[in-house]
Image 1 (cartoon, rainbow, N blue to C red):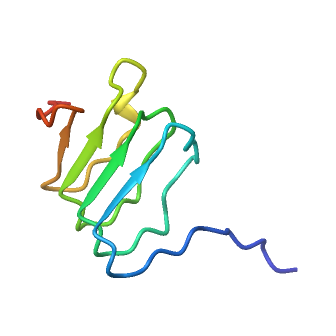
Image 2 (cartoon, rainbow, N blue to C red; image 1 turned 180 degrees about the vertical axis):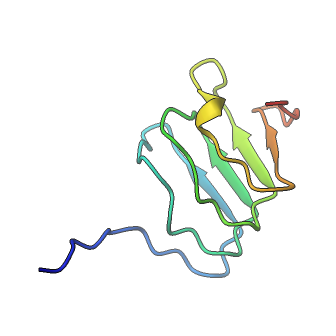
Length: 89
């Protein structure tokens, strides 16, 4: 018996920035193209891992309701707030 396939959103390889809205609450992000260099979240309330190594900036707009410990940051990436200030984790 075949294992069920995981359906994900297919993104064009030319995409370099993506924003997840308030309603986004998927447990993981596993299908982003390697060209993504900026990811923006309204808040983080589920584990975010397996981001492409090309991600250089992660923006989190609502820090008051976010758990940044659920965020696995690629090497060399910075995390910023809604005002573009660097967040030290």
